[in-house]
Length: 429
Image (tube, rainbow, N blue to C red; front, side):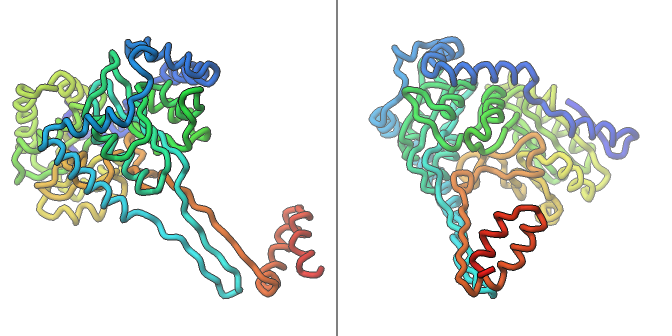
C-alpha cells in the first residue's frame, strides 16, 4: 500500500503516477481477443463451442447451450423468502430510478415556421453480459436488464460464463425477475462476439452492455461500431474522502468492498489527519484477517491501495477530479460542499452512513460505471444506452423561403451544387 502526503516533497509527481496507472489489459490481450473474434465471425457456433470447452470446461452440446424460462422461474421461486424479497426490493428501486430517466420527445415550430423535433426509440435487441467466473453477480443482471426493459427493448439476451456448466441460481432468478428473453451458457470474448455477429443459434443484437474481465472489455472495445456498447470497463475503484470523525473500521470496510473484486482493483483514501490515516491502515489489516475474500482483497490493497494525507480538505476536489474515480465516498460533516467541486466521478456517495456497497444493490442508480478515469467524459449505464434519438424537420413554402437562401449560399460556398439545386429548385430559382 502506498502512503502519500501533500505536505511532502515530490507529492505532485508521485500522485501523477497514481493517476497514470491504468491497471488494464496489455497488448497481448488485444491480440488474443482479435483472434477470438475473427474465429467467432468466421466459424460461428463451432468456434463458440470450442472456446467454451477450453475456457469454461464443459461441452455445450451436452450441458445445453441455453437455459429456458421455466428453469429461471423455478430458480426464482426456490429462493429463500428473505433473499427473494431482497432481490425484489432491488429490482423495484432500480426500475423506479431508471423510469425517471426516460427522455421526452420534442415537437415544436420555431419563429421561421420550421417544424423541428426528435423522437426517442429503443433498440430492437440488447445483449447483457453477466460475469460468472470469479463471482456471479445477479445484481449486475438487474442493473443491465431493467434499464433495457424500461427503455422498451423487445429482446433481452443474457450471456454468462458457466464454469463446468454450472450456473448460479441467483443469476437465473434475477433473469426471471427482470424479464430476460434468452440466457446462454457462454462467456468471455467469444460470447461478446456471438452477440455482435450472431451465429446459427444466437441472433445478433444492437447493443452489448455489462461488466466483465479484461478480455470482455477488450472485445467490446473492438466491436464498437458493429454494435453499440455502454463503455469499456476496467478494474473496480473507490475513492474515499474521510475526516477523523469517522470510525476507522467503517472506512476500512469501504476500501475493502472494492478491493475484494479483483487483485487489479484500487482503493484510495484521502484524509486530512495522519493519525486517522494510520488507524484506517491498521483497521484494514484487522478486517482482512477475518475476510473470506482476503487473498484477493489483500493483493489489491498491497499492490494498488493508496492513502493520501492532505494538509486541508480544500485540496481533495482537485485530487478527486484528476482521479475521476468510479466510486467516490465523501464522509465528512458537509459532504455537499466538496461534491459541488467534484466534476468527474462515476457515482458519489454522501455522508457517513452511505457506503458505496448500498449503491451496488438497492439504492437505485446504476452500478455499471466508468472506470480508469473515463468518468471525465462518460456516465454510468442508463436507459439512454438502450435508446437512440431521431430528429425530424418539416418546412412549408414560407419556411423554406425564410431559411433556404442561406442554405443555398452555404452549399455553393462548399462546392456542392446539387445540394444548392435541391433547395433552389423549390424556391423557383
